[in-house]
Length: 443
Image (cartoon, rainbow, N blue to C red; front, side, top):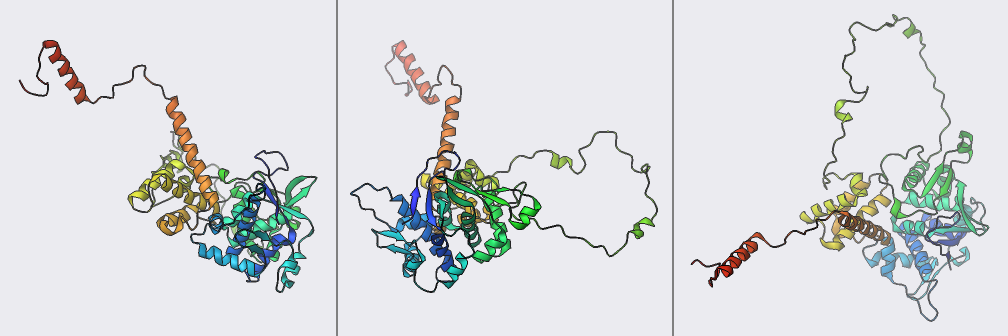
């Protein structure tokens, strides 16, 4: 049984926000190795992490209460629309004895001896990992992220850095270590270029913090990586998946390459010398101009364009208000349902695109919206909905506080329509003059 240690939301060193799972090194490698040998699918690896999360949720069940495990909960964690795919994944996991599931009991294999079949590839992979007998603390938020739908390279990079960087020492979690992309490629069977791209994206996502080391250190050990123990889906940067992070790219720098020139520089030297005092045809203007390389058009700050589903940009995914504008447009086009539930699903799709898109988050979101009927329940995970709910609640809280801070007049304006006010004035005049006829009728 996987163990868990519940932690609070403190940012103290060595404490994991959201809690962590305690797994052995063989237990963490087994699902991936069976997937590499094509005995499992990538969905099965995600379902395995979802089962680990479900098991820990029921670890502190009250005495006398019998826990139950439902397929719908697994589907919510992995973002599966129907239960058939989840049921098939659980069947494959049971066939290789990675889990034991009957609806009331859920147990994960803790030793390779419990898994049947040929494990020669597993023992070879395990031999390339140092400190095989230690325990690995796996942050639960990262485990749910893996279950939610990470790519093959991204899943391999996360597992590799958990093995290389996460330790338990002196009762605290240490999450700093060195990890070469070539080592990840060799152990997990993923191309080194894909490894570097996935790690760079996880750095931009905030899950990893990369420390730039000297060149000799990068060549031999790679850059030093720190797993963010306080990582949360609530603090995803606005431009995840587009461009590179400032400062680093998450890859080891190659040593400088010597450049050999086949032509000598004498061809330039024989040319006539350039003028030293300027040319008479290059008189600078008397009026001040914009800086060199910046035109007057680009120097002026242009207003932000209105969000539209025709061209979705990163700012649309980062701003809840712009997302709600896109939701209104999707309602008019018949793509999304209206109401609070429709808003929640729409923002959840944006959260899923920001968390899992490898290169083009706006494009992925536009595709999810165009195929709303089959993507809203197939790809949205529980963490996606929770992040969307928090974003909507924060927007409502800010709107409420803004309304309360607005100055109010001492005398509230009348809410009566003008026609009603005119009728009452005529009625009061008739009463004062002693008339009995209704003001609405002619005398």
